[in-house]
Amino acid sequence: MEDLPFSQTVQKYTQSEFRRELAVSRAVSGDRQYVQDRLRLCAPEILLLLRRPKSHIYICGLKGLEEGVDEALIDIARTHGINWLAFKSEMHVAGRYHVEVY
Image (tube, rainbow, N blue to C red; front, top):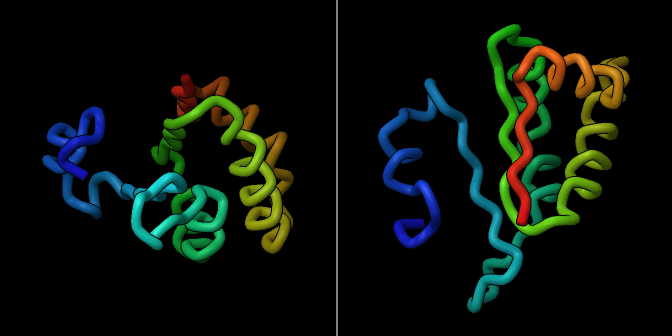
């Protein structure tokens, strides 16, 4: 993780301050994982974080990964009666939803 952008900044925060999950789909070894798969594995924690009014979501990576992330968040939110697309729009307007893709 040390060679990733902003890794030193991110590592300064504890998991209680800044929940971070790393998914590397182009790993050289067999440890490949996609962001949407990681989100689904963390679904209970994601739901708790979504309900916190001060939570932010930051999505960083290659352009196009947003579609898979949205699909996973739609599935996760649906299990608790949340319309993810409307909720995401509210988060975006509130400045709590951030996407940095390249």
